Picture 1 (cartoon, rainbow, N blue to C red):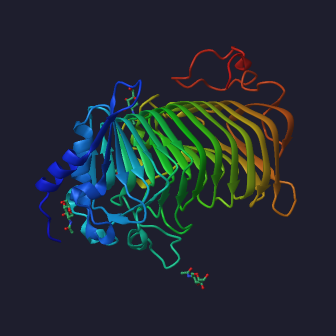
Picture 2: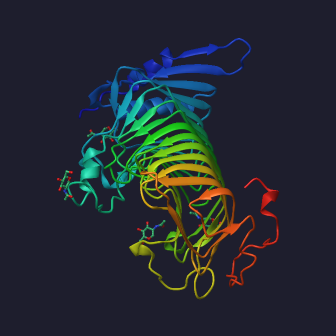
Picture 3: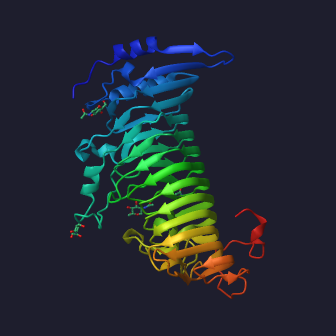
Length: 442
Ligand SMILES: *[C@@H]1O[C@H](CO)[C@@H](O)[C@H](O)[C@H]1NC(C)=O
Ligand SMILES: *[C@@H]1O[C@H](CO)[C@@H](O)[C@H](O)[C@H]1NC(C)=O
Ligand SMILES: *[C@@H]1O[C@H](CO)[C@@H](O)[C@H](O)[C@H]1NC(C)=O
Ligand SMILES: *[C@@H]1O[C@H](CO)[C@@H](O)[C@H](O)[C@H]1NC(C)=O
């Protein structure tokens, strides 16, 4: 595709940019439109350079800059990195559509994993009611091993639709993100993030199309969102803390996932995760914590409350034996010389009700190396879809249950049961066994 002459347009756009001082406000507000930078918006043209130029202009402007992606048009954008830091605050108003090229051949080697990549930005918001469409059909087809995509090939190189890396104060609000090639929204090493009022959808058969992936980030709020995807609705990995999910609808998809933690013997520390008021329907898992064998670190202080399950295959899962071929025990594991595992402790399940698609509604498959401790169940009522009773599986799982808990778990009744056990203490076991777990809000 021919490149248009950009420079005159850029100058014209800057000259035409509206700068006004609001009464009482000191900072300038600048309004820019993608069309000012030569974007065509017909869904066919290559509008990448227009976006790059518009971003540069917005990024160089102090105060608050509104960058508009006009309604009623479709802007086709090739893989691109929009980098910060910028001088002021940028409000990217996506009112129209941003679409990806459909053919994976359009991605060069240097573009692996990338589509709309925001790097090193602060004070950025995306809103506007429009649509970001990864048009990932060909990517999914390329990673399926059979016609119904029940088996996957590795799809490592498929792009993340919206990737925010090393960012702070980012909000994504009130847009639709759909048909991502792989993950829809990814926050890597970000702080103070909001992902609210989003509609995130891909077909159930699209492999790995995670809704929101949180990687080593803190203070992330994910609220009032609808996820209907092929992968996890929300997945939290790396060193992440202070993550809140609320008012989420999830399904179909793989459910909500913390981990896999400790892949390749890495040290992953996840703590202070709160999720409440969620509906999970027709998902393959419900609330899942999964850790690799021989990993390090912990998942600690996780609270799931007021969650309704509808036809969920595995509503509550802790799996400390999550496996990948690349994770076979190579050399010395971190932790003890003999074995190690990511610790899973202080996990609360409060008011979890609804139906399970399978008979086993609760699975606590913990490890000899690092038994799960201080699990807490309060007010759990899970039946099979047909109304029958469900069961719980436990291995090396300790904690207590209070109130009515169905299925009956293996945990101590009204009393923490780990203390009564002479379980071998693995190295790295945190101190404070005698502290009352009620003393904090987890
Ligand atoms: C689209 O434009 C971008 C930015 O100019 C360029 O890097 C890319 O190669 C273009 N793609 C095609 C297919 O022309
Ligand atoms: C794929 O799904 C169709 C329709 O459900 C079915 O007839 C077919 O046997 C499936 N193919 C495989 C390989 O499972
Ligand atoms: C998490 O933090 C630990 C300790 O600082 C570090 O060793 C590890 O690499 C971090 N993990 C990730 C995924 O960044
Ligand atoms: C683990 O190792 C495998 C193979 O070396 C690699 O493909 C994968 O990305 C690694 N995972 C992490 C989380 O580093």
